[in-house]
Image 1: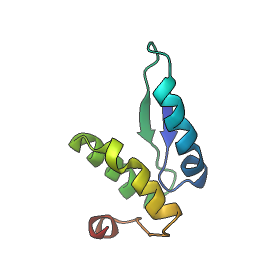
Image 2: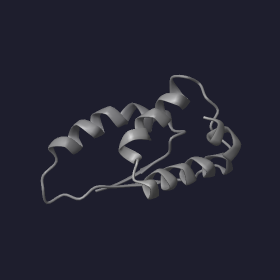
Image 3: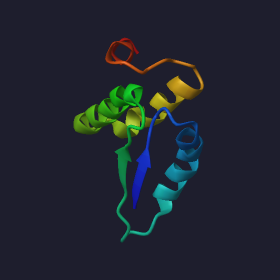
Image 4: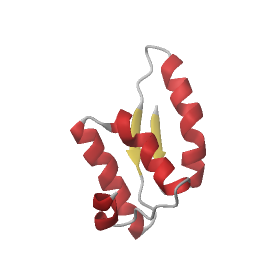
Length: 86
């Protein structure tokens, strides 16, 4: 299964908890892959953030925290500088 998502998307943020629950019990023959999408120019840094977390091997640790920062804490993580400060 391929999930196309954006950290900026409120629907993706709402879907994250049920998705994580499903991933814990998904069939063994199902592979999962997350792919960030960029529908707006200011979503590019968020896609880069995901791929950075993936490369560092820390997606599991920070994925939910990025959604929380944007959608619950109202952090404006829409440029590289803001992400670095965060």
